[in-house]
Length: 228
Image 1 (tube, rainbow, N blue to C red):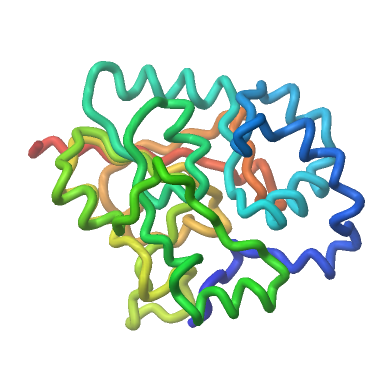
Image 2: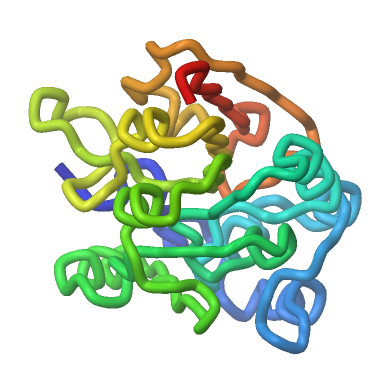
């Protein structure tokens, strides 16, 4: 079992280096260090390999496009919502919803060593991303909608070859405790989740932008809990 599996990239193997992507700091970050709200077209103007390297250096996994935010707001409607595994808080900030994160990449020494070996910068959650693991946050706060982008699934010892780690989130646990669970990710990372055996919707939109190599594998999965 590893901590990053397919999710983390080794930028040394790509041939693009930090100095090559410095120009993206100004293009992508606002004055508070959060991702600007840009359109899918804006992101497509940059070489995707540059976005991948920049994302690794700035601990980003998904990019909150204007199209994604509009789609999520429509799905949330007037319901209470929560983002778990929020990392740097770009998505929840644009949705104006509460955000939590386990701070694993900041507090867990083994995770930090793994990320350092891969040349990946750990997330650095801002103060409005509250320190609380996803399962506790869902149980305690009882949101009707839970949103996660690139949330790591809890590793199942019976399936050691699947991506995840032992400090991840049990998707099934979250699904049972809310009306709607929305996961934004990529098939290379999340496509083997056991939660996909449960009834769900799967969406592909060209405006989903992540740091994954294959953008055509970006997906949004939605589980609706009829029992809630």
